[in-house]
Image (cartoon, rainbow over the protein chains, first blue to last red):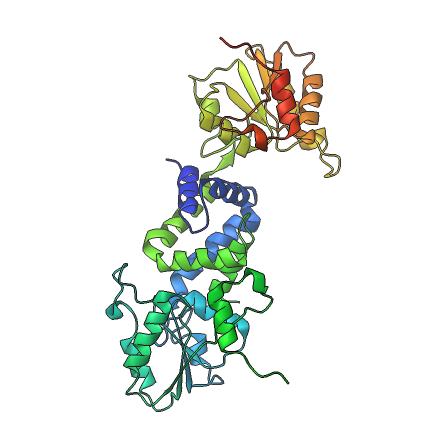
Length: 196
Length: 196
C-alpha cells in the first residue's frame, strides 16, 4: 500500500467520512499542497505535541490548567458538568456561562459497561466539596444515559454543600411545534411561564 | 488562535466537511493520538514528500512515470481520456480497463474560462500520434462540458490514425427506471440490444 492509499484509508476511518469522501479530501489536499496540505501537517504536529487534557476539568488545551480554569475572571462558584469535551465547546459557544466546567468523559451506560468508575465523578465530588463552589449545573444530555448520570451525580453530591441545578427542557429556539416530539412539548407545557 | 482552533478551521475548509464535522474529527483524532493522529501526520508528511503527477498521463503516484504507465503488462494501444484523477481511480476500481490513461485536468467550460490551453490536450494529441496507440476512449463526464470536451478532442485527433470511442450511455446497474431521468432512459432505449 503506497502513501496515497494509506492516507485515503486513514481519512476514511474518521467520523463522518467514508472511502468516497476520503478520496475527495485527499485529492483536494494534494492539489493544494502548499496552501492546505503542508499547513495541515504543521498544525497536526503542533496539536499532537502541545494539546493535553486539563487535570482540573478534563478540557483539551495547549496549557494545563486549561485557559478556562486558568481564567481568573471566570466565576469559581459555578461548576457545569458535561459528558464530553464537545458539550463543553457547545456551551462555550453560547457565551451564556461564565463559570467553570467538569468533563465526565461519557455517561453511565450498563450496556457499554460504563460504570461510575469509568467517569470522572470522584474528582467532581472533590471539587464540589470545596467551599468556593456553591452551584453544580448538571448539563448532561437529555437522553436516558445522560439523565441517569445526572441523577447518580446529584445523589453523590448530597453531602456537599452545593445547590444542584439542571438545564431547562423546552422548545428549541426556532423550533416548529409540528416537528417536535411529544416529550419535548410535554416538558415545555409543564414548565410554562407567565407572560408579561 | 491556538493549535486546536486552527486545526478545526483547516479541517472545516476540506470538501464535504463543515465546522461541526471538523470539530468531531479533531476531537476523535486527539482522543486517539497514538492510533490515529500520529500515524496520520506520518502519512501526510510522506504523501507531501513523495506524491507527484505522472508526466506521461497526469495521474498521482509516488513514482514518475506512475505505476500504471510503468506497468508493462498493460495494453499500450488503448488510451482512456478522463477529466480528473478521481475519474481515473473510478475506472481503475471497475477493473475493466487494462490500457493507459490521460488526465485532462478538467473539461472545457467557457463560464469558468477553461479553454483548450488549460487542459492537457496537446500532450494527448502527441501521445495519440504514436504508432503504438490504436484506440482513444473518451471517458469524459456525461455533462454538457464533458461532452463538448469529447467532441473537441475527437476533432483534434482527426489526423491521428486512431479509432475514437466513447463510454456507452444507459441504465446504471441496479438502477430503477422510475428514478432515472428521461435523457438516460431515452439513450438506453436508443441503444437497446437484441436479447438471446
